Structures are given as structure tokens and as C-alpha cells.
Image 1 (cartoon, rainbow, N blue to C red):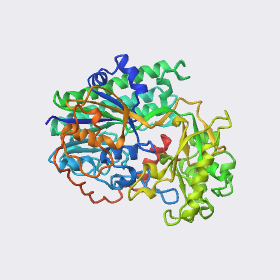
Image 2 (image 1 turned 45 degrees about the vertical axis):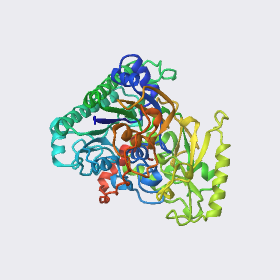
Image 3 (image 1 turned 180 degrees about the vertical axis):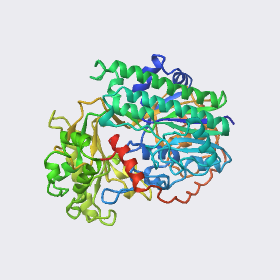
Image 4 (image 1 turned 135 degrees about the vertical axis):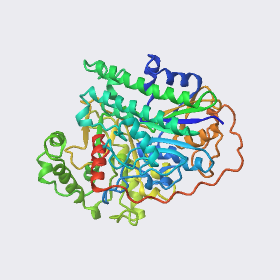
Length: 537
């Protein structure tokens, strides 16, 4: 049996990668596309890092694994940062270890605190000290930590932290992302040399971070593409993507001619044009009861353009305290619907016996849901009179399982995801316009590219679902797939029909959850990093 590698490219999209292949910047990726199979990989709803990577790792939907966003709480509860103990399903590394397969897990999101494995694990974000390059306790055992520390001279960041507000004007941020990628490559090479596992799952976060601040400089046809500063940004971006391609080449070499290499992304990317401030809209519709606007809000320190100024001139504690005070004062017992956390991109109905402050009974909750679907479907952006909402997805269309009640009831999809939703109350209008920035954001269409003896060559136009990654890769590699997963092996991307590998093993038991790993200081660091990417308000 040959080796197998899953290489995660966070936020990767063919819109950015294909021109780089054609221009010769990414020859290794190009070679996999030519000799292997390519397809769209449809992300979770919502199309965000935590639920998507965990669905890849477990083969089940968020309603079963229980990870819906970066925070483990609803807006009615005190913030708790999501961590590996939030996952209520068995991950592929546990499945493989139980089959005698050794694993190397590197920088996969939601693996902090890391678990002991046969092989090695280096945690990815979210993690305590997420922004601290010298953080402790981020590996599966001390030997792994020593290798990482030796290669990185004791300074290994678990994530590349960027800020919408501070970095979008800066070409230098691209070089910073490239430096982290170069370090990731060196560390992974050292780990593979030391442990030489049978299976590797490594995630590189750089595409996502780069596209968040500079997406529209990178994509031809954008109004930003021909701007004077775009040439330098693209030049630096090409150097970054060349370094990323070198990491892909390393993995191709590592698996060898009889192995399989699979490239996946948790979601795609596209331009970020506007934000829909959902709670303000629900207040206008009479479904959410806001407190009287505070003096801080009305004076402009936490709303509209003033919010951007405030972030530069006010101490962080002052600004966050003002915003939190508004949120705490929502009149929950008079509120029938409210926005989810930003990363969940949905709307909760304030259901009795489901939410801590819930009071809406089931018959009324269904009427509220129907009203919201109707009103959202008719919502237009007043700036152009065009519809804002492409469709509204009900929870039971995309979530099932014992954890699904925790997720939002409704997921509006806004203008091909060029509009995003926010739960902020610190805004002075229902729509916030970002078209004066080159920002990018998430899109449901990610990438799947695979090559090896058991994958076809060509293009699979129908696309894969993100929960199909685990069973499809396991089938190609000859691993046993546990029974009862949501995904299935997609025969059309395999070189032969799925071979019967004998009775499927039962889904492994989930390990005992670790204690909550974050101190107040850790939480503040993680939240600040998430705020820089626009993931929380």
C-alpha cells in the first residue's frame, strides 16, 4: 500500500489557482491537475473554516460533529472558543490509528489541544496563544515539539494572523504570509523525515489570509486588478504561491509513484462587497427588540465610519466594552429572531427549551421562519434595487444529528456570497459597503484535485460534497471506511468502482473531551485574531 497525503489549501479557489498554473507559477499543482482528477468541492453551510475542516476530518455534517463556528456558544451565552474537545465525532486520524496506519497531522484547524497519535500531530488554530509564535503544548508529544522548535529556532506560529483594517493597503503582508509558508514547509519536511508515517493531513492557511485582504488585486476582471499598486502585490503573491507549490511538490515526492496526493480546500473565495447587518434588519421588521441606542453608539464611536476610526484611536477594552454592553442589553424576552455569530452566517429563532433565553413556542417559531423566508426573499439593496438574497436554506436541509438544534434555523445565501451577514449592533445602516476595499471572503465552491493509481484523470463536473472527502480518499488508499458516515466514496473520481474491503468497521468511539483549554488571556488573543479577519464583531 502506498502513502497517502491530503494537502489542505485553506480558502483555495480555481479562480486564483488556474491562472497561476497557466503562467507557470505552480507547476506541481499543474502536474496533478493534468494527470489526476479535478472537481469543485462544495463546502458546508455555512462555508467557514471550523465546520468545514471538521467535516473533512470526520465525514459527518455539523449537526453530528457539533462545530458550527469559531465560538462554541450562542449570542445569548458567554463566549467560549471552539477547540478539539468541541468535536463530537471521531476524526480520521483515530480511525486510521485503529487500523494500524500511522499518521502525520500538521496545522489542521480545530486540533488544539492536540491528542496523542501513532505518528505526530502539530495543532492548528484555534489554539491558546494563537498569535504567539512561542506557544507551549501545541504538539502530540514532547519529541514532536522538539523537532518543531529546532527547525523554527523556537518560534513557530500556529497561524498567519492578518487584519482587514490594517493590512489591506500593505504589500508587506504578502511577504509575511510567504515567510510563514516557508517555515511550514521546513517543519513538515523535518517531521516526515523523523516519523515517516503512512498518511499525512497537512493544512496551509496562507491562501485564505492573502485573499481576505487582497483578493480583488489577484483576479483579472476586478476593478482593482489594474490599479497602480496591484502589480507589486501580485508580484509578491506569485512568490508566495510558488513557495506553496514547492510544498505541494514535496508531498508529491513523498507519496511516490504508488501513492496518492489529494488537494482540498475548506471553502472557496470571492469578492466581499457588502455586509448585511441582520440584527438591525430584524429590529426594523419588529422581530428583535434593541435597547435604546447608547451615547457611545449615537456619537459614532462604534458605528459606521466612526467604528473604523475608533478601532485605531480607542483602547481595545473601551471599544469592546461599549459594543458588548449593547449586545447584553438586547431584550431577549421580546425578541423572536436574531443573528447568529458571524462565522455561522445564519438566523436563530428564539425557541423555548432550545436557547437559554428562548420563549417562542414551536407553532409560532414556524410562522416566524416562514415570515423570514418570505421577507428575506423579497429584500432588495436600496442602492441598486436588486434582490439581496439568492435563497434561504432551512436548517433541516443541511443539518441533521443530535447537535443540530444548536445551529441557526435559517441560512440566507446573499448575492453569490459577495454579501456577508453580521450580528453587529454597532452600525448605522442595514447595509455596510466595502467596495472601497480589495477584500475577499468565503464562497461555497472550494477545490478537489487528486492524483494516484486509484484516481481517474479529467474533470468531474458534478462536484463533491465536503463530507465525501474522507470516504473517497480512504477508498482510493485502501483504508476501511467506518459505517454510518454522511459522506460516501464518489465512484466517478476513482479509477475503478469501489472495491469491497470487507465489513466496514463501526464508527470509532469519540475520545474523552479535554478540559476547556483557554484562559481569559488566551481567549482575548484568539478573539482579537478572529476580529482582524472579520470573523467576530
